[in-house]
Length: 97
Image (cartoon, rainbow, N blue to C red; front, side):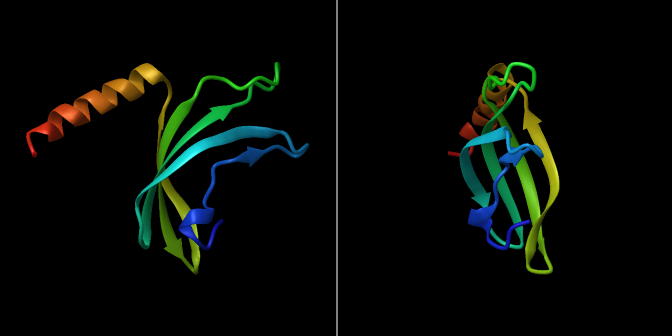
């Protein structure tokens, strides 16, 4: 758990120190006691040791007791899905301009 928003990461190592989830990029979408962060990441294939294609996740954190605790997440599993989400959001909000 992190005390500061900028210290939140989704890098994840196993007991042997292998980086199983590698954070590539991070974008803080909202700051405050409820924080939303979008991450670009790769997962390691444990059999080959190679990292798979980039994926994205949007995660919400709530500050409790001085620490940011994960509350919810939505994983975007591939580029096709990511581009479709971006297309729909662009269509929906282009009328707002």
